[in-house]
Length: 211
Ligand code: ATP
Image (cartoon, rainbow, N blue to C red; front, top):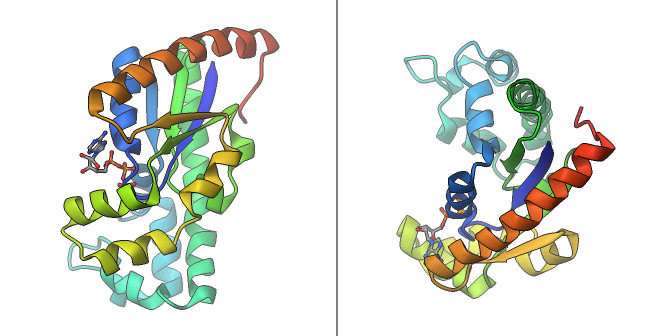
C-alpha cells in the first residue's frame, strides 16, 4: 500500500489530477468531502459544532449553514481555531477508518488523499509521499476568476489566505505541473503513476503502516 497526500493551491487543478490518477486505478480520498461528511446532521463534528456555536447556525433541515458559521469565525482567529479543533480530528479519524477499509480490501492499493490545506495544517507526517499540483500564482488567479466568476481582487484575497504555492514546492516529493493543456497534465500523471507503482513495491516491502 502507498499512502500519498496530494495538495496544491486554490484552483491549481487537484480535482483534475485526482481524476487522472483514478483512471490508473488509484483510490481517491477527498478531505473536503470528509469534512462535509463529519459535519452532516448528527455527524461526529456536527454535534460539537452545534453545542459550541449554537443552533442559530443551522438551516431548517438541521444542516450547518456554512455562510452563518463562516461569518462567525471569519476574521476571528480564536473562534476559527475552536472550529478547526473540532473538525480536524474528526476528519483524521474518518480518514483512518477509510484507509483501514481500503487496506482490508486491497493491501496493494495506491491511495491518493486530496488535502487542500495539507501544508498549512501540517499534516505531512500522515503520508508516505507528498504530491504538489502546481500552476503559477498568476495562472491560479486567472483560473479562479474564470471558474468562480470572481473579480481579480476576490481571487487575490482567496490566494492570500493560503501558503504561496511557490513556497509549497520545497515540501513536495513530486510536482505535477498543470500549467499546460489537460492532455499534457494527463501525460505527466501517467509518468508519475509509473513511479508510484515502483514506490508501492518498496513501501510494501518495508511494511509501513499509516495509523
Ligand atoms: P479548488 O481546490 O480551488 O477547488 P482544484 O485545485 O481542485 O481547485 P480544479 O477544480 O481541478 O482545481 O481546477 C480549477 C479550474 O481550472 C477548473 O475550472 C478546471 O476546469 C480548470 N483547469 C484545471 N486544469 C486545467 C488546465 N490544465 N488547463 C486549463 N484549465 C484547467
